[in-house]
Image (cartoon, rainbow, N blue to C red; front, side):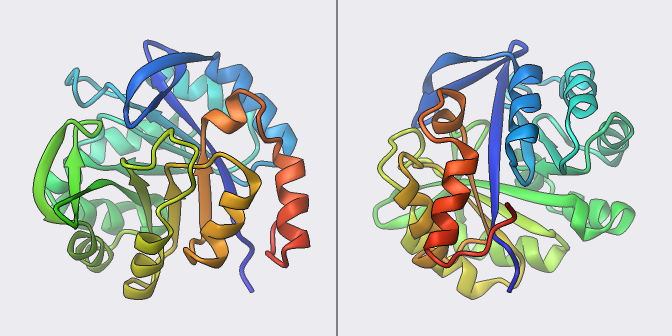
Amino acid sequence: MLTKRIIPCLDIKNGRTVKGVNFVDLRDAGDPVELAKIYSAEGADELVFLDISATEERRKTLVDLVRKVASTINIPFTVGGGISSVADVEILLKNGADKVSINSSAVKNPQLINDLAQKFGSQCVVVAIDAKQIDGQWIVHLVGGKVPTELNLFDWAKEVEQRGAGEILFTSMDNDGTKNGFANEALATLSSIVNIPIIASGGAGKIEHFVDSFTVGKADAALAASVFHFKEIEIKVLKTALKINNIEVRI
């Protein structure tokens, strides 16, 4: 059985780690380089770095900060925010990223997924999907959750797999920052319709939520931010609890 992964997420704005609720009301959560060092030492399986305002501000990802973070960790490192071309990805990989996460640019130019998978391999390409329920339908949103599209979450997930994405990072905007648990029903549906790993994001508040994301939601990995940043859950304690619940993790 493949081990399940625990992934802290650094949402970056103005060079600092931030965290909000439902994608708004951001508050400072610390220095990204220091947090990265801590998570790597504590046994995180991977680290995700999302420059959350890069697309909205129409600029590239903070490459210098990516390099600093990469130099302090020894776990796989995924970087997203403001990526819109093969050249952008080349720069990030040269500066320490192992994988890239694309979101708005993938919706606006789906061919980008094909191009990146062809050039760097599917294992390098994570497609992030931010979605919320509108009239009972899961609708994909762009630009940090600010712009709704006409895309259905499940249709889009199937398409990104067909185009060569190696993983999907699904964030439920309805659950984000609420600490009420992940969107397990949607996760389970995603896991049943695609054959690539699904990373659950949005809603972690306690250890049981991680257990549920793997058992009920069938996720391959669970990503969280504030519960780790503000020391509400320690990664080692979390992984021990997952083991007790017969969920395979790397200790």
